[in-house]
Length: 299
Length: 260
Image (cartoon, each protein chain N blue to C red):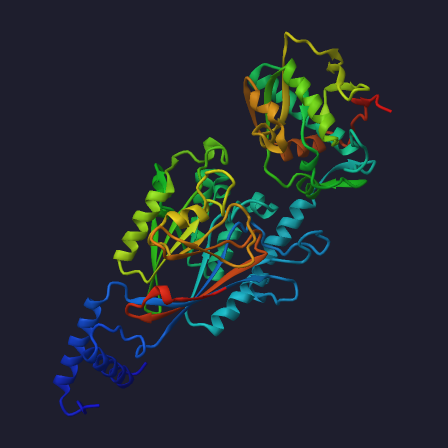
């Protein structure tokens, strides 16, 4: 934007503010668009499924995912690319290269933030840390107490990403590893109940003026019993706008909308597994405050 | 609009003041007005990013080379659908895991394995006749299940028999034999050829998945003691392939159904 244009816009917007100070000047400011793309439970599926696969013949593959992401980036200025964990385990690529290729490719595709799933500890904490030099994106988790210094350095509770003037707060939640990961492989990772922590972090991110608060969760979409899940968390939350989940390999027709504790809408999404799908959410923002009960959700 | 061009100072001050007013006035800087969403299916008609394909290629070649490593020769096709109560691939799997795991159990825990039970669903591929490579081992056992030995009493062994009768699936089995009598109950239960002894406990080799209650094998939850062999079942079959130059096993009948 050139300066003259900026000034003209500022003045016209400001005049409006002068006339009606309580009315946020949404009409005068330019709407901003953000596209969020996300995956979960890719499980080392680098190649597409073979043609002869009975269930997923020819589907998936990271090169194809990369082409779709490139296309979205060509059409949209602000794109956020996220993953909800279980990057590792599922093909011999992981058994032979230990996750090096998965990390290199995710960095190449321009992932912004990811959380960890239980399988990301399948080669132990040291196995997860081993190939961090290839990671060009952030890892987040807020509900694991970490005793390992190496892990503390890599795994932060949240990450604030700036996308074209939009401030996006992203935090992570992980599943109880007890019974899922061999004890010796997740030594020094202590699970804490995620609900209270999620609400605290989400409030903190809103206080830090985040325009959108996203939870990357590996808790699972929903369970028959009382176990905490994305759907349960959404209903118990206050400041989370979007939960992108994993673990249960749940394929949804479209994102689920849930009323939170104070009646605000939270979106929950998950895209199955093995890189067969890519989730896409398009958000439009205006500057200033806006009656979010009037937010139009088209799913 | 008022022309402020002639008064640059006034112009900039006004902008600064108004900008400040705006920033202070809002808590969040932006608000969401619309949301739309969809899932993009990555079907095979979509193009690939050449750069990514090229990057993967050396890894893929390296991996293919490793997976094509010759392990041994298999003289007859082993098939998951080769029998009602037992299959040849199930017999081979249970026996080859016993062959590798029993010495480990003896060495690490000073005890012998009495019987082996896995799940039919855990065998993910057949083993064709011909050369056996590492790729076959990964196809048969893509999961990372580990070998564990559970300690069950005679009552729990009877539960295993009853489970097999109800399930009617050829779960891989070794070391346990029984007949199904006219009433559909297990009779003549033998462990390593000897009648089931109510005063004894038995060591059962299985996978961590089943030991943790997978496939409704709830009897493993009652185990008195679990011994963790710290060995992946896939590695056990790879070791067995390497040890025997040809795939060999016995098709001894373990379950005899006496119902007409």
